[in-house]
Image (cartoon, rainbow, N blue to C red):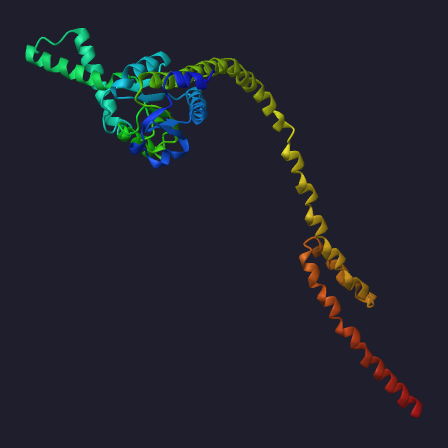
Length: 343
C-alpha cells in the first residue's frame, strides 16, 4: 500500500497547526517551527506515525476485527462517513453516546429496538395503533437511526478506534482507553498526544487534511479485509487434510496390538518365587549334624518337607540329648572295668 508522500501532505495542509499561545507543550517533539505565530507540524514524523497506524489497521482487520471511525465535528463528518462505508467499517458522525463502548449491551438493545420498529413499518403498523402512536414510533425510529446508523451492524467491541479530534471526542478516547482498545487519532498542536496510543500529528480542522488521513486508514482497512477473505477461503482446502488424518488415525491406533502387555506381563512366571522359596530345603543344615546316624528314624518325618514350614521343627534332631547321655554309660562300664582290675 502506498503511503501519502510529503508533497501530498503539504498540498492537503496537514502541516498547519494552531497559534503558538494555544499549543500544548507535549506536542513539542512534533512541531517543526513557528511561522507568523502559527506552529508548523513536522511532516516527516506525521508520515512515520501514519505508516505505523496503517500497518496496525491492516493487521487488525486481517485478524477478523473491525475498526470504528469517530468524527462528530462538521469538517470530518462527510469524509469519515464516505470512507467508512467504502471500507465496510463502522462509524459515528453524530453525537457520541456515552457508554457506546463501556456499556455496549445497552446500545445493542437500542439497535434491536430499531430493527423491531423497522420490521413493524415494513409489515404495516397494527390496526389498533392510532395516528399519534404511529407518529411516536416513527420519530423514535428516526432518532435511533440518526445516532446509531453507523454501528447498527456492529456485533461487539471494535478492534480499534480512529478519532479525528481528541479534544471533541474526549469521551470516546477515555472509553477506548478504559477497555484497552487501540486508539488512533489526528493530533493537532493544541492536543495532548499521550492520551492516545497512535497519535498522528496533523491538522484536524481542514477538510482536505482529514480526508487524506482518514482515506489512507480506510485503504488500510480494505487491504486487511482482502487478507481476511483470503484467510477465510484457505481453511476449506486445509479442512480436507484433517479428515484424511482422522481416517488413517484409527489404523495407527491399532498399534496398541503390538503392545501386548499381557505377553510381557508373564513376569509372574519369573516370579515363581515359591520355587525359589524352597530355601527351607537349603535349611537342611541339620542334615550335616547327622552324626547320630542311628537316629535316622526322624528322616521318615520328611513328609512335612512338603509343608516346608515344619522343616524348622527338626529341632528335635538337635535335641538328641540321649546321644550325649551315652557318656555316663561308658563311664559306668569303665568304672566296673577298673574295679575288676583292682580285684
